[in-house]
Structure formats: structure tokens, C-alpha cells
Length: 217
Image (cartoon, rainbow, N blue to C red):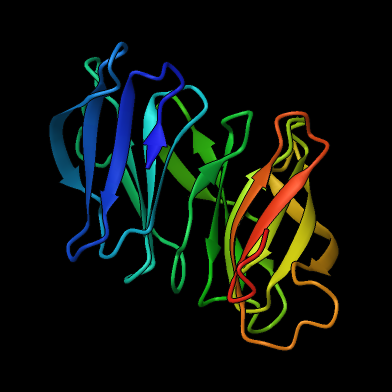
């Protein structure tokens, strides 16, 4: 699910084949949802949807066939057909724009990298960055990424390796660089676990990651 900046519209993926993205109007008093229709996600098995910072576009990743799509948000909050689709890599698990709305990043779990794009927020077009994707450790399984409020730092959680990586964003080039990787699991853990979600506290003082198996945050 993703809610736009106004809090008036919600977007939801149907993780199906072919994939869909549904649009809903949110009643401001009751919170009730009114379905406004659905459009193609531009691929199969979409696991993730986000709204760009300007609230003009819905971004969707398609896990099954490793594609992403950019969908225009209409004046009434409904969605139009994709204006751009790209093949990004195996098991595209998330898509998110940086706070400046000039760059887009896609963690690809099966490819062990984060695809990097330039983003034209006026047209919705994605252009592959001239710099290759940000590679993770082999078999790490990069899953989700979250930005710090400073707009220059991001954090990547790896599903298979249960690790968290601190990243620096070059705000001119739109590229990520790895600074530090640590485990998300407690010392001495010996069971089976996978990393899942990552969030930065609004204050920027705390980072949260979830573990499935250790069942911890």
C-alpha cells in the first residue's frame, strides 16, 4: 500500500499475474475507501508500490519478471496507463524515488544489486544511470531501501543475509555508495531468519529493521 502526500488517495498492488495497481479515494472523516479503478502494473507479481515526493506518479516494481513501471496520477486521484516501463533485474522487490524526486532506486533481490535511474518528474521517464547498479554481497538478497530525512543517506536491508547497509547518496550524480554493513540479528542467533522491512524514524535518530524467523525488530 502507498498513500499520497495529501492523505486523500491510497494505491494498492494486486500481486497477481498479470499485476495490477488499484486506486482508492480516502474519506477524510471516516477513512472509508472508494475504489476508483485499477490499471496494469506493467508486469507480473508486483510486491511494492510507492508515490513520488511530488505526488504526480505511482511507481511499481514487478517481482516475477523484474520490471518497473511509472503510472500517472490523474486529477481525481485515479491512475492512468504506464508512461514508462523498464526491465531492471531479477526479483525487483521495491521501487522508490529519493527525496529530491530526481532519482529512482530498485533493490533487485535475485540480482544482488540496486538498480539506479535518473527520474524526470515532469514526464515520468526513467533513464538508467551511467554508473552501474550498486552491487551487494553475493547472495545478500537486497530487499527494501529507506531514506534518511537529510536526503543524502539511505539504508538497505538484505533479505537473505539479514544485513543492513548504510549508503551515501551523491545528490549530483544520483548514485549510492556503501559505507557500512551490519547484521540485523542479535549476537549468538543460530536459527533461520530473513530481513524484511526498513524504516527511518522521522527524527533521523533511529533506524528500524525487521527479522522474520528471529521474529524481532
